[in-house]
Length: 250
Image (cartoon, rainbow, N blue to C red; front, side, top):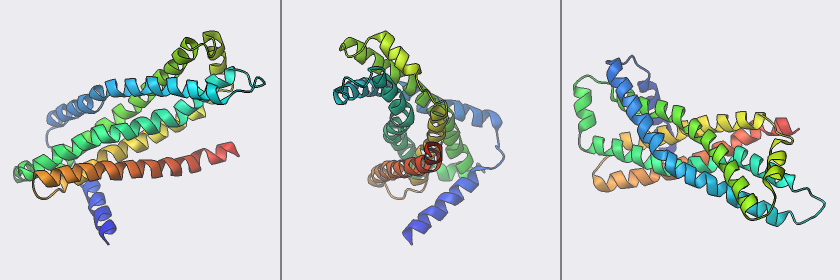
């Protein structure tokens, strides 16, 4: 019963966001502020993770492909596909769930505990629309862009690791990078990134908006929001892969 209670309150929260803004300039300012917090401030950690993910993927792939029959261009193909299909959208979004999700939950939780949300509602402001909608919209705009940057940096990291360690030359890596490329994989990764962005922003917003108690409850709500977001990310990853990649494979 607790699951249905939370799910119903979650849907009610989402429904309450879609109202006409009281002040467009105020909403736009909040949206740009969230784009900076969610997107630009996460660029550093995303860049570092992406480069090392690509580098490790190249080295481990070369370690496993020991047969001389298999051409070295296969290493570049495997690095490219694993980074685009799984590492860039899924692993990066799991990290962002911890970085962004905890921030959103604690921010809204602090506003709820300190009665700032109640004060805004007394002033006639739709707090669901003003506080939650810009966060979700900013996540839907910036997180897919971060995933695209992660794809590029991951492939660059694999290329640098492959050439620096002498596994394969840069020309061989570039040639393998272009072989058997399927543009649908990028489209699939973008679908995952939009789905994950909605989960990362809306689930922590729900836990933060409905927190009750004091500072201890804010911490618990923030932790729970990250755990639930990560579980939903992995579940959505499996569902999307089953729906969108299995027909393409068959």
